[in-house]
Image 1 (cartoon, helix red, strand yellow):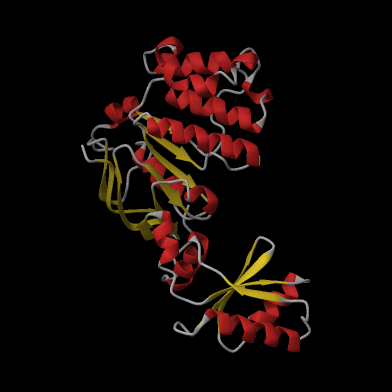
Image 2 (tube, rainbow, N blue to C red):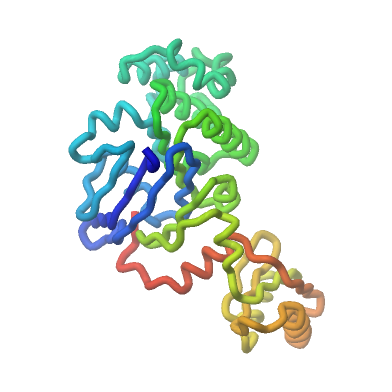
Amino acid sequence: MSNAVEVHSVSKSFGAVKALDDISFEVRAGELFGLVGPDGAGKTTLFRILTTLLVADSGSASVLGLDPVKDLWAIRSRVGYMPGSFALYPDLSVSENLEFFAAVFGTTIEKGYELIEPIYKQLEPFRARRAEALSGGMKQKLALSCALVHRPELLLLDEPTTGVDAVSRREFWDQLGRLKSSGLTIVVSTPYMDEALRCDRVALIHGGRILEVDLPQSIGARYSLPLIAVKGSNRFALLQTLREFPSARSVYLFGDELHYSDKRVNADAGEIAAEVKTFLAQHGHADAETAPITAGIEDSFMELMGSAPAPKAEAA
């Protein structure tokens, strides 16, 4: 089996809301695949279709060579799913939750322990603690352990690091890397572009549509506009002024700086940076610093979002 997941022209609506709009992509066996997009892009709806919890209005999908509608019970036994919100039993202890999920799949913690050991050993000192009393990072580890205890062939993770501290996020992605190296196929959705860089390939999704599917580095490399980083005091006023520059295409906040793109595709970025600096100084931003930069995946995503057709309604 070359592809673990295939999605062909899938659409799904909820009344007037077009959650998914004719999307297609595939996930190769053994791949760590990222579905990257903001809240409301359609990621959760897609995961629910792949995990047999929703039926698409049109199009087709294949999960481990099986049909999510006709073969739902076979898929559920072979897939591990971690939803975006904490979905375990808060009144049960750590060990009780894990024992319950193992029993649901007809197995035991002992049989699945080899796979979950790197994750679960951090929870074992707290195995008698109720799940609701765990920290965000520990809840995340427990949910992942429960999704893996039956040794699935495919792991689907819906925004698993949302609301988790930076250290726990990094540890979680280190764990995903180890799981991938064991041969497990992983599909993970995230709104964080830095996490996208840790995937083998990514699909950028916005408004229920797939904008691009490629290596994360390749998506950034295809950015064709001159791009300038701008720093200075009072970033909001700086942003407003930059948007008044005659050749400005877009200006966005990126951390502690602004990213300015220019309409003149073939112009020298160094010369543009000098022009922008002069313009800002003339408009009250004498401390502004400008420098040409190489685009990343987030820059490309913002450009793709700006050039894509407007979504018909907010996706879910």
